[in-house]
Image (tube, rainbow, N blue to C red; front, side):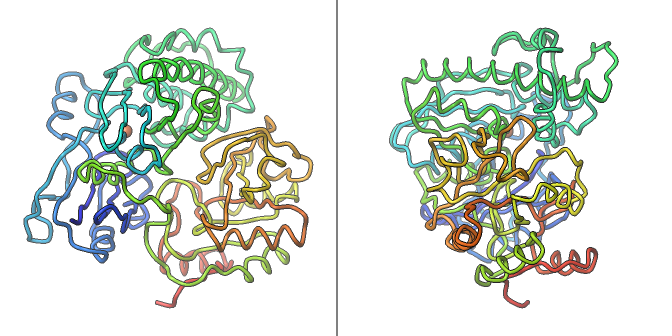
Length: 484
Ligand SMILES: [Fe+2]
């Protein structure tokens, strides 16, 4: 049976296609429409997905009427009406089944994991009513064990402060997380803590933003507030996760929802649980796959996050190495696009991490703020010599201390940490070969890896995007892609 999963009417629409436990396709609407965090699926995305098969069933990631009832009763801003006419796909009626927002998150995590039993935690801003849920996964069954409803919300707390310091809520939380390293958490700790004193108690409904902050906010205050918010968030997360462990008694954790994108906070999860799985697309964009696998109701064969638009071609190992030696930077677009917010080698800018000036150069190319850090990609077997980590991080989901910052200054943040991507040969043979060659030449098994995009724009997706980039910036993208 072929199932098409859809998520839209939230930030970051996406679709996924699965067939009998195999994931055929998963892609983001924004990569096709070029509208960052696009709320709606589009014809180009659907056409691309359906080139892999026509669905027998459609799974939708929310219960629209339930969400509408919350909006009606409790307020909040959202366009809840799905624009995609899911029950009349291309003129052919396809049955549609809806799943609750948190159920889709939980299913996306558990059914893509290797676990046969696990504690599943979902934390986000809000779906229909639920904001925090705990589930138990056993065999092929997931059961809800705990729920907390709107307006108490980990995600809304974080987003409200993102807005307070002048960033876009629901979009630029990751920038505030990066800013935290430059701030002093102690300055605003007490004040911020009063807004979220325990995981089940908050000062008021953060959907309206922070409405009673009277202190003047200077440029440095923005960093200090970010540090305090990150500190308080990590404390509440820690308490919630201990409670989840106590309720479920499971030592494996599946963590999903937009909050699972907070890589600085995620590292401490390994102190509570013996194994952790965060699907590489844990936010709402991952819920098209979540709805599809919820309908399938069994584990799927998770192999790779490279599930989107296919440029074709072979990984251009030699060209990348040549460019790294000549220019210290290599822009790469090849094969299938990543499903998730991180570029993991197929739509990436790779660079020499030894050069302290490379960070500014890449930030200028991407038109980002100069304080923004970059992440390293490292051969998995060398990771523990360069970073303080005892686990693999194939999808750049954990921030850890760098052990040799003087040798790779371009990928170390202001607080001495790095958001690491580990790579094995099995995971990505081409990228692994690039790193192996780089290691032989330099003695460094690490490269800088960042997404191939301009700040505020989606990652490059197809041949057209590559041509436009090359024309606009007069710089070549190395593509192991087939000609159109
Ligand atoms: Fe969500």
